[in-house]
Image (tube, rainbow, N blue to C red; front, side, top):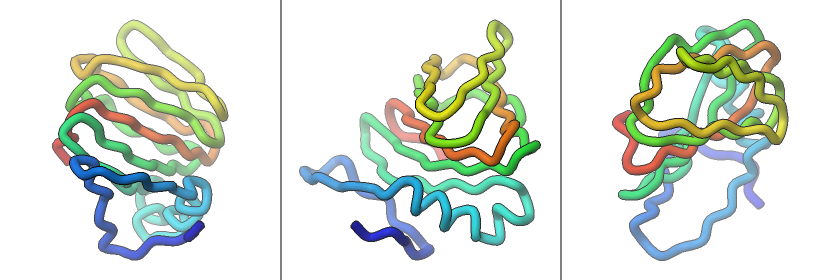
Length: 129
């Protein structure tokens, strides 16, 4: 399996018939080498996008926080490595490797990486970014 990608990366079009495998951890390592990660403490790559689903791979440095924001639609966050804290007005959930959380698009939430972390965001419908 190819372990790298090149920028600009073109997300897989999920509106066509296909099967596509992703080397998530190898791609995450590449994201951690990008300038954006070095300067902001985070980087992401939209891997696939379609009318019904968007898949985003995200990496965050320990101590980095994504400020409170809504999702464009219902979503799932799945932690592949490290430890993140998902916070909404109703919950504060610690997610480690293999853990996940689901929420509706109207839930304002923030994400804090307490360790260098890798996670997938699966968003229902097209993401606005």
